[in-house]
Amino acid sequence: MPPGPSAEQPAPPGPPAAGRGAAPVAVAGRPGAPVRLARCCTPVPPDEVTGYATKGGSVTVHRTGCPAGERMRAAGRGPLGVTWVPDAVPPSGYRVTLRAEALNRPRLLADLTAVMSAEGIGIVSAEVEPPQELRVRHTYTIELPTAGTLPLVMRAMLRVSGVYDVCRPQPEGAGNADDPPGPGVRPSWGIHGRSAAFPEV
Image (cartoon, rainbow, N blue to C red; front, side, top):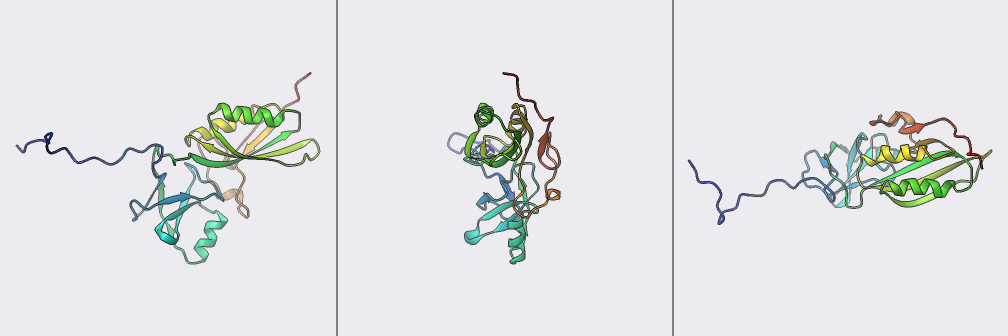
């Protein structure tokens, strides 16, 4: 029987465990290739994704059907097969854009940011469009600690008084059919509720 590993001859290390800082996707045929998640469509598991090679040998990952990715394909950059790595999280988390449709009221912005912060996420930017017929649209770019935080944040936002829809906006030029359904989320990546009445003062 061959001797086992000794203190002088340690066993070779196994593959690194997935976790924060690990590459979020694996590229078929290109092990170890550096990858970047596209900011135009903010892919996050379990989105269907496609990779495109860029200068320097890195791979940019787009949601399948993203117009920017389709332009890269049309320019002759062949798509690469990519798959999500279970439990892997980019160093700064997953960046996602969310849009909330609501009835306008005082402190709506404060209440929405409070429930998002309570879920342990970072808010990168917030945009509030001018109200239209008492309805208002808020768009937030956030960083998720894990992909599984996304449906939790969307449901928390929907529970805020006045909010009747929370969704991930499509990249410019894309249609709703490009997005696959995710767990606990509608096929349009939106969560809808009844129009909430303003609380009595």
